[in-house]
Length: 133
Picture 1 (cartoon, rainbow, N blue to C red):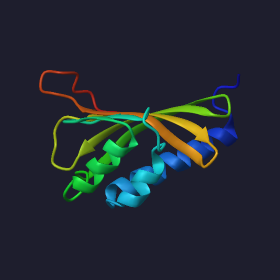
Picture 2 (cartoon, rainbow, N blue to C red):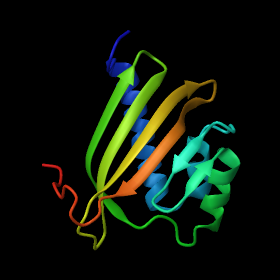
Picture 3 (cartoon, one colour):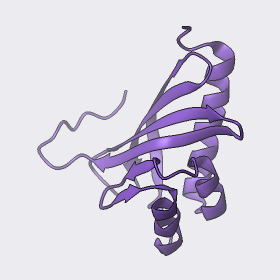
């Protein structure tokens, strides 16, 4: 198995960048398109646990104003073979002091790269306050 094949890494990096653009512009249709439409898809958010694509899509529709604006501080993407990747993002929401973290598991499907698992969390006071270099 090849780790971080250049072609695969470029594909996943483009998908992660496009996801970030959709998140910051609250493009709900595009955001839904990044997630695998399956009951096994999971998204743990800052204040919600969503099981299955239908719960994730319903959350997006009900989220007034979309995601808070943020700046990506660091992005780490690792690909394993040609069909599996993990993306980790450290970010800082506008006006926040503590950074947040986002992890996504990406799978190549018949319709392109899709998120099958995602987790978003915010560091709390007293936690490791290190920001990315």
